[in-house]
Image 1 (tube, rainbow, N blue to C red):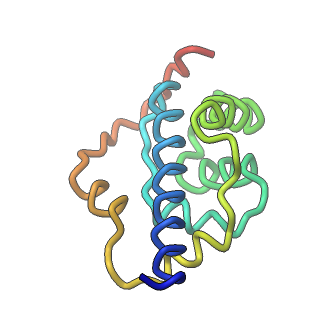
Image 2 (cartoon, one colour):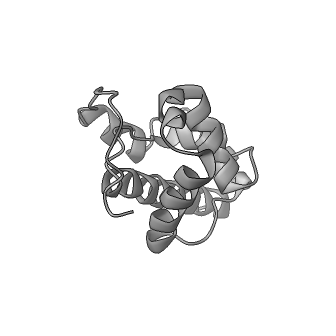
Image 3 (cartoon, rainbow, N blue to C red):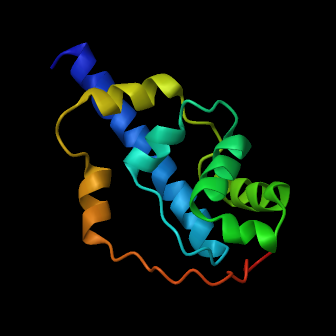
Length: 127
């Protein structure tokens, strides 16, 4: 096995672990959205994790900002995400993943998951 192949698989596993950690945080808080590998990879060029979260919410769920401050949301999400995966996702690992033409394990699992599209304000359970 080549070193590049091994590094690519490790990067994919790391990306999957981060996606799972974020999605667990969203679920624990009662937020009704899920990230997949592409979503996280599209945000990976933003260095600060809190800014990634705020950017995502501003773009895809701005209604949440009517009830919660961006700082509150990003802090609540990051606190729970970091309990699962404390280290930030390296940008290089994400770039390696995106260079492959095959669907990742994360993408295949995301297709098998039913995403709830109820956009009412979440309860932010546990905050």
